[in-house]
Length: 314
Image 1 (tube, rainbow, N blue to C red):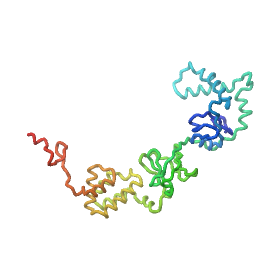
Image 2: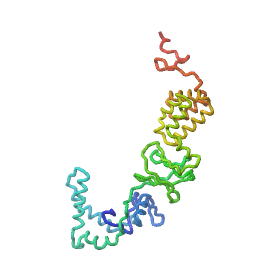
Image 3: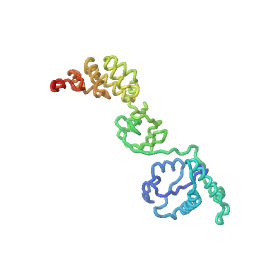
Image 4: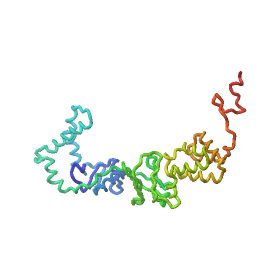
């Protein structure tokens, strides 16, 4: 709309629709966060009309009637085969309406706008507003917030703090007390994480050291089954934090248990199609790596003394 006008007005006077006004009323007015963000971007004041008071914006109400009669009514018997074609016809009719001369407006609406309104408009800003959504979350213990199942880091000192998140098509910004504390390019990888090293405490910066190749080096030191298990987890697809947790737990387990047991536990986890190092840890804690493995019969059932099997009935 501002680009069509070629400038920005001082005030916007919308209805109390939910996309503009969250709470109506002069005393406790609350604007929609996105609408307020747009107004701030264009440096325009928003003063919604009072509910049920159409005379607060009479020119708007009259213009709706004029557009219905001169554009929508004339489209009623036309057939269009695409939105672009419809928009072209609306633009043509709008231009005709704006240039139309009447007894009350001898010069036409467009000429009056050029002479009276346009000189009073503020110039357009350099960049058009980019639509943004706002969300509120509490910063998690791993100093991240989540947008569409993707984690974004904030400074670790804000753990447990409630923050506002401004989400656009390209950027995720995190705000605390109205101040931006983090900004990241938006990432659509589900389950991934975008972490800035500057947001980490010193002891967590070691997360960056856990590359997929280092994870494989640790696994190869333990044994072939551990290597196969890490390969099954596919370190390249894991986030940096997930690789860090997997690698450090694997090192801790290699100190607490003999390599043979840890290697056997990895084999058992691999056979069970486990999805994390936690299962390996549980296998070791419950000594499942030392229990005999059950075999499978041709029926797909475990070979156990309490199962008769089909040969029992011959």
